[in-house]
Amino acid sequence: MRDEVQVRGNRLAVLIDADNASADLIEPLLKEMAKYGTVHVKRIYGDWTRPHLTQWKDKLNKFAIQPIQQFTYTQGKNSTDSALIIDAMDLLYTGNFDGFCIVSSDSDFTRLASRIREAGLVVYGFGEKKTPEAFVSACDRFVYTEILKQTESSVEGYSTETKLNEEDKSTALKKASDHVTSNTESQKLKTNKKLVKLLKDAYEAIAQEDEWIHLGPFGTQLTKLSPSFDPRNYSYKKLSSLVEAVDLFEIRKISKAIQIRLKN
Image (tube, rainbow, N blue to C red; front, side, top):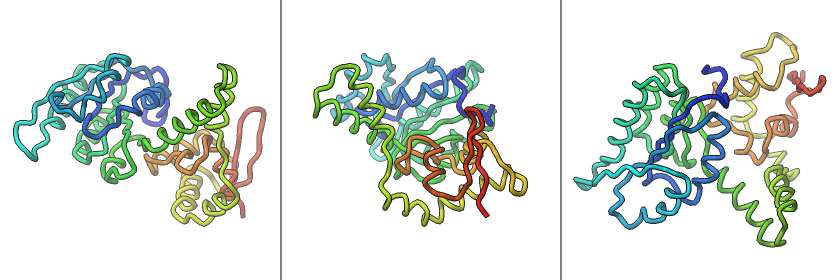
């Protein structure tokens, strides 16, 4: 199951650290999670007596997220993290889930993610780019929430500015998500040593010498090598578009399948 990271039939448990997540992004977050499976549990943890969490109130009702109250007993101690971890282990032991979605930018959940993976389940992490590398690496896949924020604001911009009808909004959504970088940005990709090395390493890990490989297994290998890899981090919606822009590979299409081969 770990090789098939995106399996829509997976039963998922979503656990949110309210102190390290934005209420404004909950809708795009849930849409993103729907790519990986069906959410059966949605819980969010925090001290709900504190005013800074009031922004979550409407969201909890709208998306049927269960708030878990955890009082802050001692200043400087994060009892919320402990409550989330305890609940995660309880859910793990039920054997009812295939994967967990942990929404936080806190490195305290690194060991939790590792423990869940040790049990053979998939872990999807969601957090800001400031998230420590240890937590990112402990997940099977990690999605930076800035990506979701950019997509959401792009779509809102199209809708507000032109007052589109429902059909036009659909077109706007496609335009926003299919955003293509400028020639300057494309050139930056080609000189991004870290990205180029990652792409080459992924290809060499699964290909024989000068072999054509399918884009699907290539994408899976990229995520194995770097859980935070996502073409949207580079302003491309699809991996195929990113691969074409970097210009490291020959590309061919056979029926609907895309194959690539490293250029000599």
